[in-house]
Length: 174
Image 1 (cartoon, helix red, strand yellow):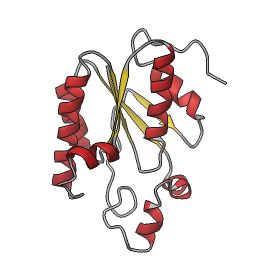
Image 2 (cartoon, rainbow, N blue to C red):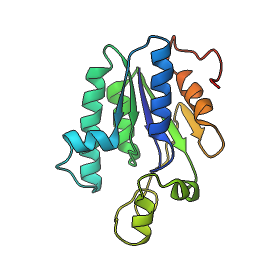
Image 3 (cartoon, rainbow, N blue to C red):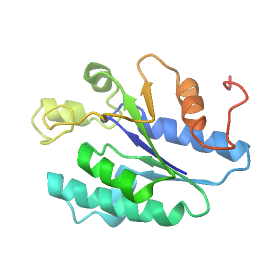
């Protein structure tokens, strides 16, 4: 199974992915997280943030996910702002693919700002920040929409877990 978490920077994609990974591990289910920032450092350091470079980075993630998903759940935490690229991922990775829209208002993401990207964008130090001064195309038909401004991490993770066959949460962890 491949769970593709998409949304604005600071929406909670990676936090949810790590929570789901821990819940799967507790059930004895092997999983791998492909975090967009980490993958970019390791295999896409040669790319910038133009639409073409973002699409190339996403295609690389798709290729890795396809291979890894043969024997484990793959959790992809990736802004992936371009709808056509996510649709391509769906085509290539189906039927084991599920898109999760980690939806959060821009104002909340800006308050969270875990990497300081929004502050840099406001000061003009970062150009092309998705959702702030670069577009993000909302998913049209994701399998799941999570509202991280209204749900706890545990609630969101349980909802994601429900997409994975044979990995149903018994209850929300406390």
